[in-house]
Image (cartoon, rainbow, N blue to C red; front, side, top):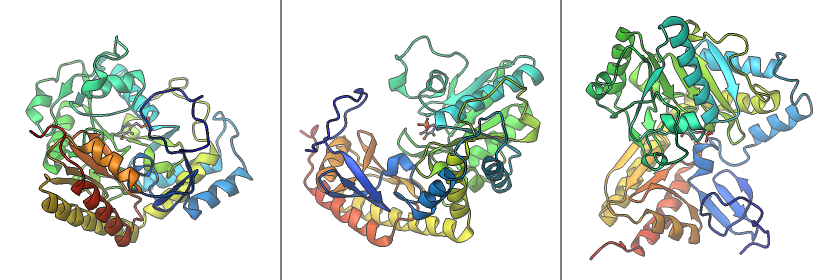
Length: 395
Ligand SMILES: *Cc1c(COP(=O)(O)O)cnc(C)c1O
């Protein structure tokens, strides 16, 4: 038990009695000096691991140069990051935010604005059951997470829910009020459920034919996580709007809204925010993007993802569990029984951080720089924990 008191923090979730103090690469240390292997990485945030020197140095350098001049003025760092993001993504315009949810709020606002000026007031955005887009009121409304349904009523209207990988379910929801379809290329929080490449391709054709915008939420899947810089590249499609978060800051709060020129219709006063594009945080984004958007780096993510997939498949076979799914270094292991919380707790005791987005699912989102040795250590601990975990619902 740590000597540091956590009592003054608002209680918003059940957290284990561990207080973290220091991190390096795939490792975290608590205030008692105990070491943990981290396969959560701040929820797929620390794409280069904990405290990568390239990021720490960029932050220190920028902190001594210019932290924030006000969003009412241009600054060199956010301009450079926007240019580089546009070059690598095929989008034309970028708006920076402080979080993923804010990037999605911006995407929703941009789509509604587009509907207002170009589609006769169309404003509905079709989203998907199981989808997760954030914790602001509008992004909770856009999410298809059952646990959100009773919360904070009344919700923001205008987000009918379709079924992932079912184009007919999308078509059935389209009316003259529809302006866009929005989805995650892989539903992360729901338990790593991929939108099939064929579905994304069909959805792109369908939305283009109907004059609807296609919005991809790449907050969890973007920035190299799946082995390409953005997950939509696997399907070879070109969306109209994309949101980024998590990995783009490598651990510091940064998000981005990207759009094609044709869709970038905000007028003065429509969008803003005190910290948008502040050079301190954008310097982190630049350091991350320059590291990740290198073909060899992305190839290594794909290779390491294949290693993790193969090792998890062996774990599944050894313990009689279910399927491994996902792409690159965003993978899930289906436990086939509701032991997720027990496995996560057992792993923590054994010095391993894992996440169970659902009672029967483990999610793996290590640093994109994770090594074969670290994967082997992880599966070794997981084997021991699984061997000692019994199904509470078994007869
Ligand atoms: C995490 C996440 C969000 C929300 O991002 P925040 O930075 O927590 O606001 C939105 N969409 C997806 C797909 C995410 O994984």
